Image 1: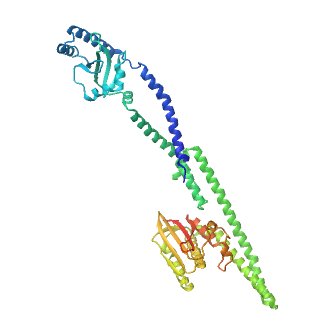
Image 2 (image 1 turned 135 degrees about the vertical axis):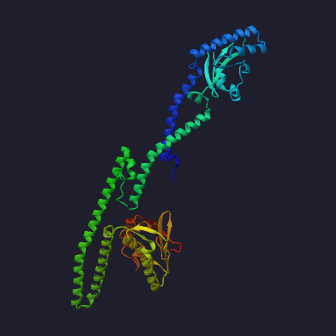
Image 3 (image 1 turned 120 degrees about the horizontal axis):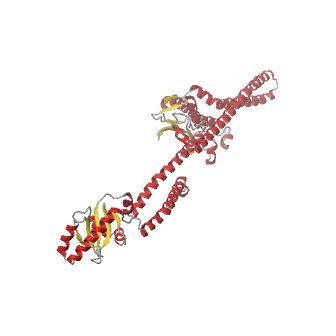
Length: 469
């Protein structure tokens, strides 16, 4: 299992967050300190003149009325009637002692906040926005020690005011949300082409050596990756690699086919010579030697025939072309023949064909299933079973027997050409070691997968997986 700490996506995400966090802190911390100790938002211009004029007027009224409650309230309301602001006066405890109109409860609740405290402690008139209310002040009233005048009016807060009024957890939440989204975009832009490259390597690993990543085709889904020069170069190198591998394999197959063809002519002459020698030989002691030579020549002929079948399988399949057919149509006749042969061999044969359609090279597909079934008949003691199913858009064909089976460490070697298990080499059922190699090649041509496992009854299970149409 992949360690999450070593995940490429998490590393990119972590570095992005760390870099952004350091950048933000390097700006935010000095800005916060400067904002707390500076008077950069001091009041200037017309609003400052209004505040100073109202303060002087209120000082005169308070001194004249000797702070008599009712007369003071009437005089102050009359003095501030034509102002473009509302007003209130608070004492040292931030308790409202006079006002021209009622303050909203949400605004009164903010009098206990740190921002309002800093505002009221300022020695110079300033402005802040609390609960969509613009406050200017405070202006100390010299005629009433401890009292301070604040002018206010409803006003839409500035973006900076909204930011200042947000709690720390709100700012942290927005920061995490934005950075997560940006990190996801960054990781996605890197992970998508890497995942595409991984899928391409998996396709090559399954035998599709001619698989390419088309970043130049107008209708290709991979064209979106061409905007990144580094990945475009990587994909081009991948395509060059698969092209060289394909050319190498094709050259090897062509050489194998040529060798097979060239060997058949002298082999035919050798068989004709052995037949003439048998007719003319009079010494009975030479007959066993001739029989042995004929047997070996027949075996060599079979080797060449199967090798030629293996090397020309792809060429015949491409010439035939893909066909869309049902599983029953492709394997129905094969299963009937297997049932007939099973009765003659006194083997219990069972098969189930699921209702599914495939887009395949039919001849290699049938050849693959037939080779596996015949291989199962060769080693089975009493029973062979063929089951099929449709799983996640794939058609799975499972063929099991109750034969001696194969050792676990030999399962991965079964598709190697000319490989035979130890039991096969020392038994009458041992073949040439090319049957399962032909199966693997046929499965690869049809974009499928082949796996081997030990059956519950002790034999071998071969699992063939093909994409459904």
